[in-house]
Length: 163
Image 1 (cartoon, rainbow, N blue to C red):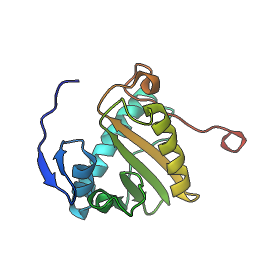
Image 2: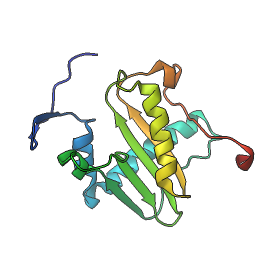
Image 3: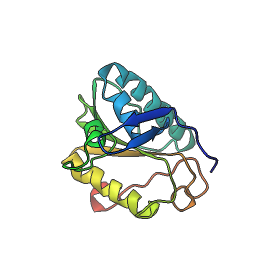
């Protein structure tokens, strides 16, 4: 991957952090502000509609109605006593549904990206507390083991209850 140039830097309590367009801190800061929630809905709906064009039978649908967005901006400012959640949680108020959005800047991670994908998948189920939940990962590098050469991959839990 080519060396990316940061948008700028932010000084935290214990270090200086470069900020990129897909950086967690930048995105969490941007979408903690309610005036930017519609832009997030637009981004998610563009992706969902593109996915629906490729896989028309998907159960995913664009986000409509009243939304509430929660970010973990404060987690990034003070990581000493905080438990990591998902980057963004978009609540669909009328539908009692959640959409979790994760931003991943690197394909090579510790733990490995496939393990991280499974951890976040389970985290979305656990945090959803019985609500219907979608998990969207926006990857800035190709991960063959997750995407299998495609633009989108949809992992769905299937079992007797889902038939």
